[in-house]
Length: 144
Image (cartoon, rainbow, N blue to C red):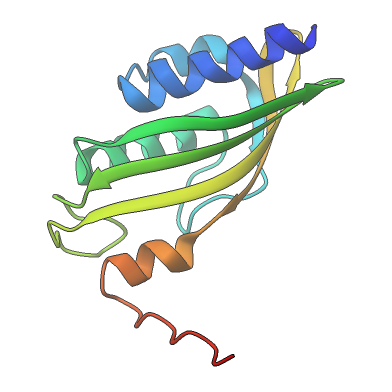
């Protein structure tokens, strides 16, 4: 696939699946043997695990919205830097609702083969999310 096609596919996944909640599209976009190399705690493997993860996050934050900040593609990989924003209104990973607005950033790499996602790696700011939820105290700035 050309770089523009890889980017379009990654955009479609974020817009249609994460932002609009169209979980049925996962069966079209993801290979049955899809591997998430950066799963969340307790996440099932494969496309079914991805559906579970997205449903959990969308239930915990019904106003969840992803914005694509940057996107690069080369070979069979697309790199996306995104920002997700939402309000913690439902249980998330055992954490009761806090009604706090949170912002999470990440850089992810997806490998696409024959028009389907086959592998995923992510570097997310989970520490920042936990601090915003009040689960971990924010670090004090370093003195100059």
